[in-house]
Length: 225
Image (cartoon, rainbow, N blue to C red):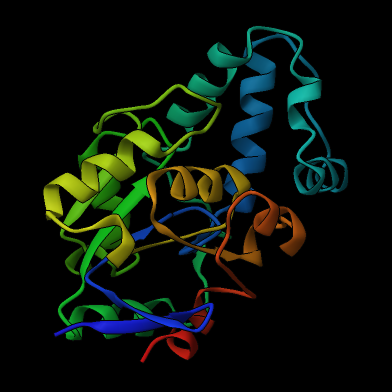
């Protein structure tokens, strides 16, 4: 049993789905803000008030504010995003319905996050949001093979999922919000579905390899048959 997705006039059978976590399944933008400012403080840098932060986040210009080793900064940030739930954290609309639809149709589902979390931490968070039972595989940059060809690359994780699930990349979708996710999927031959809940523009997602761009994950059922 499988679902199909129509791309450029051709129907593709889907056997596996790779789901990003932050700003795709769960709205964690306030957690991101706090973790970013905490990391700025650790590195003796000045944090950002909410309005300035969200503007820089949407412009993808946070890197320009980091006047220290960026790898060290973001590695610290990625760890701080784990093992915590902020009051504002919440599922995006439709998440449970989408994951249920995939599961009911026999689609293997993997979680792929750029956080530096242990799988136990991710499992605890997924359980908190009622998502754990949907996933056949959990991957973070700590627990799965990484790829350093560009910053925030998920290519290593995608390859790992493909191997573990024993599926063809052409029969696999990745749903995510960031342009590097689209680039990762494109370079690994996976169908890339971008969502606008991460403040990226449709044009930027498409420019970096998105096959489709949706307003949010709740629109996924509309592209599957």
